Structures are given as C-alpha cells and as structure tokens.
Length: 262
Ligand code: BTN
Image (cartoon, rainbow, N blue to C red):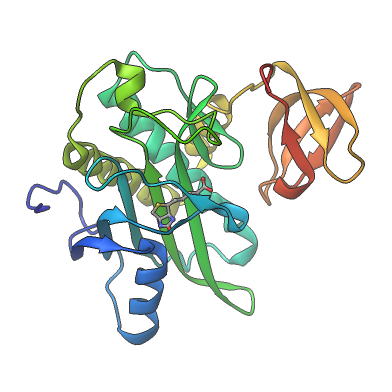
C-alpha cells in the first residue's frame, strides 16, 4: 500500500504503513518519545492486533486489510489545555464531512463525545491522546478506527456496523477512504487553527446523535434513568441536556445513552 496520492498539506505527508501493529496510537507515542516527528506524521496499520478505545476499552479492528486503523500527530499549541475539546470537534467534523461526501446516502452522526455513527450504529471511533505541560497543549496523537469491510462483528458488539454493511457493498477501498478522510480532517483542523471554528462547532452540534430529540439516559452515579434533550456541548466538552426545563451538564463518565432496543 502506498500513500502517493495524498491531497493534504501536511497530514500523512510523512508516514509509515505497517503490516501489523498492536496499536497505532501506542506505536506513534513510542516514536514521539524517542524521535522528533513532523506535524502530521501518520502511522497506518494494515492489521491492528490490540487497538485501544476510550476509557480503557478495547477497539475491535477486524481481519487484516479489512478496516482502517491509523494515527497521526498534531501540534495544536494554539489551543491551550482547557480548550482541547475543540480538537475533538474539528476531527469529528472532518470525518463526518469526508464520509458524507463519499457516501451521501448514509446518515452519519456523532454520538457524543466523538463516536462516528450511521443512524444508531457505531461505524468508527476516535481516540485523542494529548501531551500537556502545565496548561499548554503540546501535541496530540489522533487515532481513528473505521469499520469499512467487516461483515460480521462479535456478538458483544451488538451496536457495531461497517460502511460495507450499510452501503450494501461487497468491498470498499480502504485507501480511498483514508485519503479522503485525511483531506477533510486537515481542512477542518486548519479552520480551527485559523480561529474560525464557529462553523465547525455548528456542524458538530447539528450532527450530534439525538440532537434536540427527547431520549432516555442514565446517570451512572445515581443509576437514575431520565428523559432529556441534547442541546449541544459546552466549552469543556460536557454534554448539555435539557431535563425538566433545566439545562444540565454531563461528563462522558457520568452519562449513558439508553438506546431503544438495549
Ligand atoms: C473508541 O471508540 O473508543 C475509540 C476507538 C479508537 C480506535 C483507534 S484505531 C487506531 C488508533 N489506535 C488505537 O489503538 N486506537 C485508535
């Protein structure tokens, strides 16, 4: 696999494509710790054997060459640690823009904070690991996993799907999807870097799964179930839910979405 036809200024312009890795995020972090890497440096694994997800979850990467697992380095020093959620927003929106362009008939959503969904099924995930000193964001390793060609998922992943399944295709080109993703993520990141992130935030909010719909949630601290409406996210990335006419603010740990067929 070669990445000769990249349509980016810097993301992926230097890269490593490796047959097999445990985790692209882990590998890129190890490279970062020992070598000076250019911004945009990309690691793409054709077979990822121990993918990591958010909150210490495992990420199912499927069979070799079937799906996408890659990570790249960004240096969003312009953000400051307390604004790091803006990077999640920019990356999520870049992914949504790319996928919508390539698969216009599919209904892509962002399940807060940054899972990529098609309708109510998860097709991709993002793991951003930040290097922070004092209150400064020094660099970020952005890891993305996308289910492209897997047809059957382990029973435990009852909410997982792939582009292939949703598009009713036999096989999709991972490299074409990757090239398009990198282009759109970079464009969204450059918009953030130029300070005009209002439109990205708006797109993020509009694409939130269940935005402004009355749905059921669970407070993981009290185990209480309740009905609420997503109104957006605040500066620190907390989800803003309207519950009984009051705005309430939630961290990822404190809230669970209760899907209808759970
Ligand atoms: C999640 O949904 O919890 C986030 C999943 C992120 C998975 C990707 S695959 C490429 C990169 N390397 C990893 O080990 N994890 C991320």
